[in-house]
Image 1 (tube, rainbow, N blue to C red):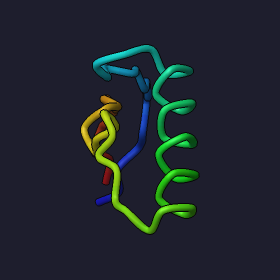
Image 2: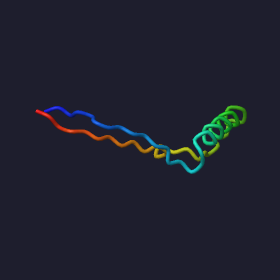
Image 3: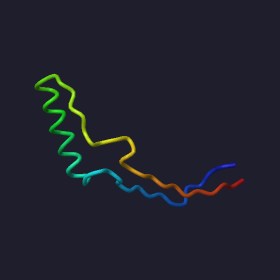
Image 4: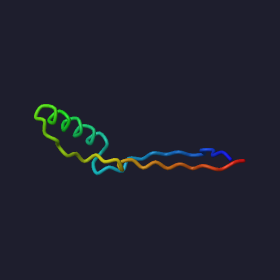
Length: 58
């Protein structure tokens, strides 16, 4: 049996816009590099939602 992907979509579900989030992540990385202090950000592993449609074939 094999799986055939028939549809795929990815959408951003973050707290702020994707561009703002990238900018804040870069700024936090810069501050952390200069000061050695960890800075929390708004990014998360769950910021993106991916949906797959598939069918099974013999």
